[in-house]
Amino acid sequence: MESTLYDYETAARERLPRPVWDFLAGGSGTESMLNTSREALDRLTLRPRCLVDVSDCRPDTSLLGSPLPAPLGIAPMAYHQLAHSDGELATARAAGASGTLLTVSMFASRALEEIAAVAGGPLWLQLYWLRRREPMLDLIRRAERAGYRALVLTVDAPRIAHRPRDVRNGFALPAGIRAANVDPAVMTATHSAAAGQSAIARHAREQFDSSITWKDLAWLRERTELPLVLKGVLTAEDAELAVQYGVDALVVSNHGGRQLDFATPAPDALPEIADAVAGRCQLILDGAIRHGADIAKALCLGADAVFVGRPVLWGLAHSGSDGVAAVLRTLMREFDEVMALMGAPDVQAFHRSGIARK
Ligand SMILES: Cc1cc2nc3c(=O)[nH]c(=O)nc-3n(C[C@H](O)[C@H](O)[C@H](O)COP(=O)(O)O)c2cc1C
Ligand SMILES: CCCCCCC(=O)C(=O)O
Image (tube, protein in one colour):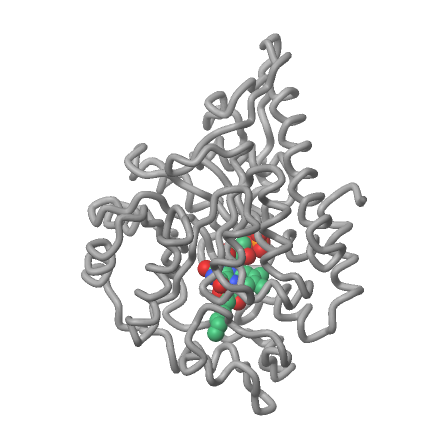
């Protein structure tokens, strides 16, 4: 197996067809955001404490009541079959081997129930808000029955942003890959695109409800007992509203640079959000998590955990379930080492004093 996450990136770039690679790797607009979260994390240095007993480091934690082996989960990403024919089943098996949380995208390419049948770790379901509410409610009921433990509503995508690579490639889903959990009647536009169009963006324009507001969130809250997570929050103001509307956790995220161009890098937004919520809901950071040290930095900034996105697809493209398991193991091994060398025997030991800005 490879030694850093970037080795899996190289392998995935070599293996995947160019339009698929571009869909996975690309960003929106000028693509200015592809590196800003990485740069924000790189600006932080770690301030280690010494002469602390780290003979038995405990990286385990819990999110919304689910125990986790480390403060790490898998971000929702559509269509894992683009990276490997086993798709989300391979990802779920790999996540389950370590008990890692997997967030399944509404646009997963395998059925929710099939994924649940092979998953050994906790599962959350991510949703986009569709114009037709019945398919969304149907999905929620199925997730409840299959044992999913939380719903993640993505709020930074009232539409899919202009992504120049997908437009240039006329990106459309290859035959044989589809959103396995959404009524095909809703998914009509995903398999063909005219030159100069992205089928994904066109589909989202037709099907996503871009009129929803906080009041609709209250409507959703009333319709399920599952904990509710909002993904894509970048301001203290919205974090405060989320708490008032009964949200249980936030994913502080700029969607991996794929939505609002020039948005605040998520690591820069995290401290103001952590201060605003002051422990009233749990916080997850996503975007550019590529090393165990990034997990430590996120915890110091106020996160309870991180989500990792593209590296999981790199692992899938590299060697299916084994590749994903190796990516997760690499991050956990690196985090374990950072804990020991930082003098942090458990996840409670990370505070803002653990980082400095370059
Ligand atoms: C190929 C791909 C598909 C994605 N699909 C979804 C999705 O279905 N729902 C969602 O909320 N976010 C989606 N995202 C965004 C991720 O959840 C996450 O915010 C982002 O990838 C994190 O950044 P990272 O890839 O640098 O780790 C997707 C990202 C990628 C790269
Ligand atoms: C019509 C399917 C839309 C999938 C969008 C996936 C996503 O969020 C992404 O960033 O890509």
